[in-house]
Image (cartoon, protein in one colour):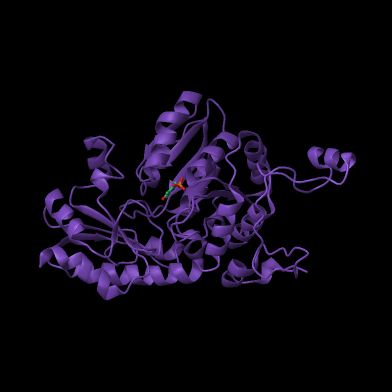
Length: 394
Ligand SMILES: *Cc1c(COP(=O)(O)O)cnc(C)c1O
């Protein structure tokens, strides 16, 4: 049967392939996929005990499912969290976190560079339910302090940010949040636990879009909220009632994706650093944004809190939208798509896609110019990526 692992003593690489392993009667080596929505009880008394919680065990897949539980255990081990609740997508993780932990009248301070749907959720949907958000500059600690109100219950950040790779100071923001009696939540999507462990730096909650690097191969949607045991209990109470639960099939895909997370993140980060360094030498490039470059404004902070720069490189071409689009349209290897976190490299023109719906002023304030391009570096050969990005100049 399953050897119970002493998780405390194991390294991240080991946990990524070993944590959350529970063999069934068949003693399978790869984790089982339990495609079942409900579970059968031995008798009426057991049904009652399972429903009341007096006896632990599965009841219905909106609450728990063994494959989802295996993913939750593995991801909790990787992030160093007491609890993990998996959700149907990254956005449902953020929605569930806010709805489970906050209430009408509460206030959030959020870094300005967060994912577009997160901005929409916090900026336009949550206010309808009485939860307000103030957005502040990602890197400006005084702006967070100034935005805090008596009603502030949560500081929410994403670091590095998308697409400009701005880095927020997790430890400093944890102190600012705690001094105000608020929680700090970090969207750890861009780094994943392979490169950054926000809970170890004082954050209270980590949220994930598992759709990105955790799956890592662009196959399924998923999300997760990680934190203390108490936060996990609140999350589960919300999830089992409100229902944004993860499909066991998707959980299984992500569970297997985690097994290669570290090696992918290391390879993709190394490739991104190489590409960013090369881009800085190109005559047609105006500016490169990558936390692993010495030229990045928060390079020192990034190297303190991340073990590598991550796989997202943004850069401005000389010229405007026309030149940026010419570069995109000349590519043959890179996928023209807004997604990221895949083994296939992708290229995006943020000002007309991911950030196309925000006002011109908001975009200008966020520093997203028309000549900006974002590359999410995958696993192709460096020389093929370089040739692809330079094809428009021939
Ligand atoms: C994609 C993404 C999300 C949303 O995740 P979905 O799985 O698409 O719902 C949230 N945060 C970040 C940083 C993302 O990149």
